[in-house]
Image (cartoon, rainbow, N blue to C red; front, side, top):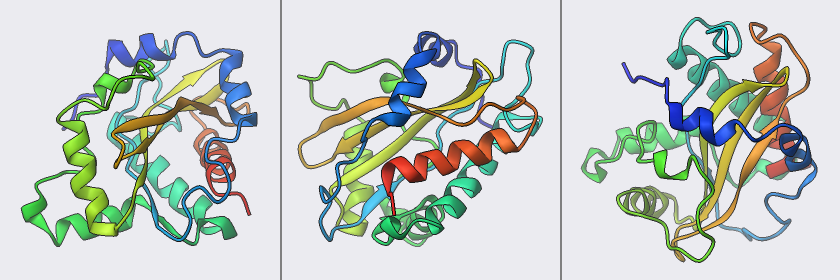
Length: 204
């Protein structure tokens, strides 16, 4: 099982505070930027417990938190008319499982280098760029959303995200989205987080 207790993830999220709320109010994906091409949202890569060791959603483990949030994101995007051209985590996993020669596990990408904000002038590092390029090619996509880490900060579930233009090898946006105030052990914390992610990325 993947170990998700990453000190680097905690460091990257430590300064969120009110920033997470401001990120919710930002337009992460400008309307119309993707055109008719699909946009890929990959599975959540990691989860971090709160300071008391509670996994967000009360799941009891990192992997269960990740699985639950992926499921909530799938449901939330299904409620948004603007998500018609999105390739969601289950579709990405299914297509890659049918194409094993691609050699990419979408839930185990080389994401750690993005746990801190990247230099806006730098190209995306390897091997992450090659991994994303191979996944994007299966869908004829250019834009990929990589959910980096879910944690619990200031009474909210928070998801750190990166929006990547695979063709340009560039991170277009790097930040966080926060759900509504909820207890760390409540599944509601992940439900509201997924709804806010869907609303920011694919508003109806």
